[in-house]
Image (cartoon, rainbow, N blue to C red; front, side, top):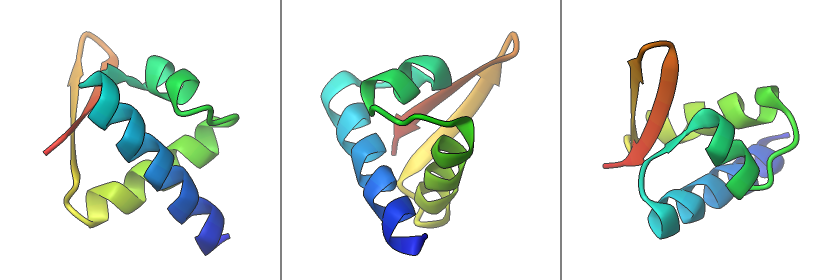
Length: 66
């Protein structure tokens, strides 16, 4: 499971690097992540490594690289 989450975290980092800040719906699509669980596990990994910032406005969660 750790290897999968690491791979997904890499896909998220690449998607954000190429596209800038994205909301979670678009991020999931661009990074080709199939489930919300996988998305949030990978985001947790990146947050723990202090690689991304997460903001919420009007119930929309946006993720960006630091």
